[in-house]
Amino acid sequence: MLYLQRPKSPPQLEALSDNERQAIDGKFDAHPAELTVNDQIIAWNRIDEVEIAKAARQNTLAGWFVRNIVYAEERYHVGVYFGAQEAVLTNLPLMAAQFVVTSIAYHMQAPIRYTGVQGLIPVVEE
Picture 1 (cartoon, rainbow, N blue to C red):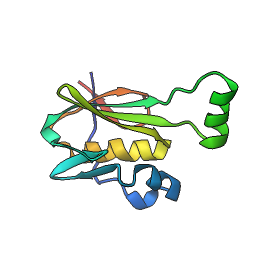
Picture 2: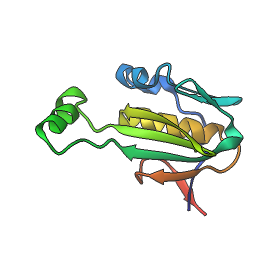
Picture 3: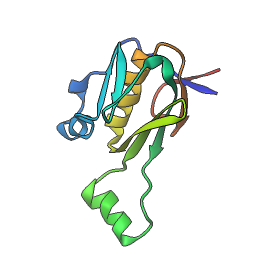
């Protein structure tokens, strides 16, 4: 099983581009007391798992248009699972998705499982 690896320092919001910051602005906040995703407050000790998934796009002209013209890059979804509930941030640029998960890893109070795209964030295997 893979678990998030705690970084030595928190990720810096200033390292993100304006577009990347806008993707999470008002939708994500991580601090020592709690995590907020889409106005949903989540206690750190309730988080079971975090997932990064590549956003699916239809293999049609419309899908190609959205991926290459509208977003001009691949997009990712970040899911936070706690108990029987989930909170999902959708259509994030890669750097914003990495910022979100690294922020969660920095503030986590107990090990949190990781699933999804490999190689995007540091994990440990247990």
